[in-house]
Image (cartoon, rainbow, N blue to C red; front, top):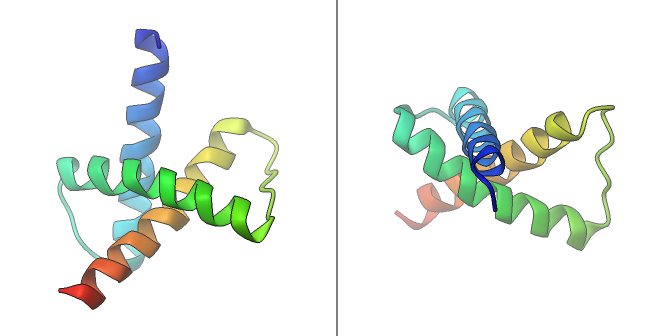
Length: 82
């Protein structure tokens, strides 16, 4: 994995975490990054499990939407457990 791919991955994680915090609350750059990255894995798994294909015209936007939905699920599950 090259540096460009890692930076894109981090940017998508931060944006997705921020979007999740807008929906369910929370804050902080590190928290955005962590929830966004974990949400990307969870969102990708959930979307494949359900069979939903996101096609919004741009692959980065698709990844951000999937990661944000996954991050929202992660935050809500964490709140249920805590």
